[in-house]
Length: 265
Ligand code: F6R
Image (cartoon, rainbow, N blue to C red):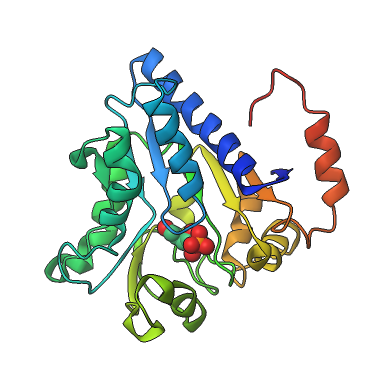
């Protein structure tokens, strides 16, 4: 796992955007458009904004043929609800960057077909060729996607119940914790670790404890994000505040400062 500590959230966004663009560019030049795994929530917004800005300035790659898969989706929202994660990712990223809605995927929360939603989503990811780079945030309770503490490290896409902590954290999008749906569909930790490269972003003091548990704590379902330690290609991009509880902070800085020029993330 490579831990990169940067001065500001803007630097985190810029490095994450570089990494996504590299994957999109190499897909375009190989004739096999990239498959991106996208997270919603506040953390990746600065990265999406940076990618959109570069595209508008004519500095971005072509997103022709690129497909995207969301990590998760609320269950029980009315059709077309603005806080559904599919609507959110279109509004905040894919529409602006020019990826058409039919290439933007999320788990299907339709009530009538919920029992098969997980296996259908797994099959769709496989049919697309698998996710090359997966953007991840981390919950203040250590969740990854909506795999709450106690989730199996081998889990696949399925329905989950949100913890009170997560419903409180997400109340800002719904007005109150009670208005946040209780159930979600989420890629499992096993699904996430099938992606080629995991790019976890965390900014702000509120994430410092969860980041320390994920990166330096034991691998345990108690901290779902600790599953990252089992993956061969993980980049954790942090600002100073999110990194503030890491014990090996000086070492991570030394490693990144001495990183060979030829080695990307
Ligand atoms: C979002 C997701 C969640 C968020 C996490 C952090 O698709 O799966 O795991 O990444 O809750 O959210 P923010 O970034 O809003 O702090």
